[in-house]
Length: 346
Ligand code: NAD
Ligand code: 89Y
Image (cartoon, helix red, strand yellow):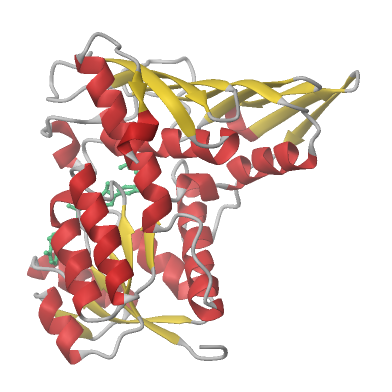
């Protein structure tokens, strides 16, 4: 596929898809040629904003009529399995937004469908593609911290996510499935796969249905212990949405990714603080710019992988392991923090 412009079709033109479309316009080697949404107003709005003229209300029709190299699914979770299976059946490579699936059985079926069809599958798990998180990973890779024995990945906020994404207030499961999934994926990205996990959850905001606070304790296969904590009920003097803070203790040194993208490394008796702020892309707006830059980064990664015949970092098979952490956390929380052997879910 070297040198060829990849043709993509986007399914789901809602709240977050506008970030996808802005980013695709800047990704090298890709053109989004068709849009699909069953809501006509949303379809027309996106079409006009991004100058895309081939429009569909039905994904099956789009796949039948267009010659696509991939589809980008930006709908909410309930439609992910049928849409991924539709793309696999049409032999078209597929990106699917998080949360990938409603159950692990669905996630397995979606991975298997793409494998059987021989089509690449990437889950749009973009938080690990945020510039500050990549900067943390580079320090780990350089060996500066030595053997890591402890870590914390933390997201605490009271930002109103419900006005842009009203469905988040009405679903039975909220923070782990929606946001914790990213935090757990970052923990896997930084500290490796997980052996055991236990968790607590709680709903603080009486106006929503699901849990808005979760604390998850994990033992990694590397021997490190980590804590993932997330909250949408935390009123801080400075609202940090959507920043993820990271603490790492290693045998040779420590790292702290503190507020406002300030990363401090202490090793060999020296302390250094680096500004690892994300770029403010031309179409982005604060405070979302950190997430928006990561959307561009993961989309460029997809284009490079598809062109080069490589498996994306967050392939369906990889993301299955993050999904397993999500379901293990809910299982532990309803069973009085029971320790779950995550390896049995693989
Ligand atoms: P949304 O409800 O605003 O948009 C979804 C759109 O998909 C709607 O316009 C709907 O009409 C359309 N749709 C649903 N089923 C369809 C189908 N079968 N065919 C065609 N169109 C269909 O949702 P959103 O807030 O944009 O979220 C979409 C996904 O993005 C969710 O899974 C959410 O978790 C995820 N998300 C990810 C991030 C991130 O950083 N990765 C951030 C926000 C949201
Ligand atoms: O849906 C969520 C996500 O993936 O990132 C932040 C968010 O928009 C609200 O929690």
